Image (cartoon, rainbow, N blue to C red; front, side, top):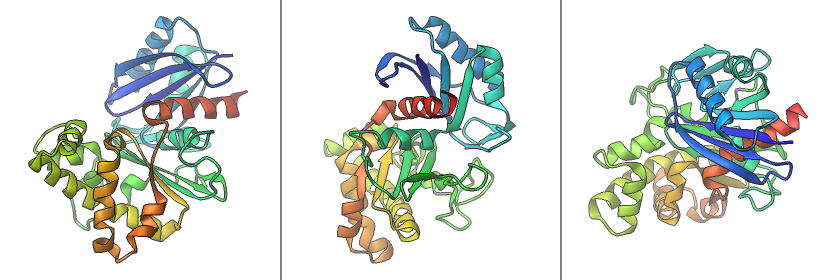
Length: 291
């Protein structure tokens, strides 16, 4: 049996086909479609049709809340409010679909052997990309809340009366810790380029990354104080910045909450699954729930 694992972001769709061992046998990348869920479903159907291996089931992660049991999806990054995308994707593809939050998918990938939180009981997972997603592992199990929509960590408030967020609130963590936030602080330079140039010693980019890292440290410290996890895992595109990002975050820990930086140093780690985490985790959840 083959499973399509799809990571639907606000910018790109990452598409993969996985075999029974979760080995990836095919990948594709496409631009994401915002606002039109039917067009997005047709785009995924096209990716399936173009694949040399046809999937039997689909697992997909979206940047937003997927409510159970209704299947309704709210996603600011995709400009969806009350969209039943799982049903639409089933109708367009004719396949069984498991739809979930993208960070929940990425967390599942990190619990596999070799993952950043394999074997741990309590984890806070953050995806730093177009938006900021979150997922929680509590007592060894994903914590989803009563309606499956828990851990929207990009939308807890870090700045009262701060920047207006796409979700409708102001001062959300996402507005200060997303890739877009880093780009804004870097004067319009793309987040990955800003991190690369900072690693090469560019003074302006070092300043931007440091400013961004302070915002990220505020969120990391707040989450640590709330959940006291064994690990806080940073995933998503910005985490590809690697150790320079971690070093700058740790630099700001004492100034944020007067915490011992060593406590956070032991807990803070980078995701290992990287770019395929969302795809692989979506495939894991599809296999768990549809077979």
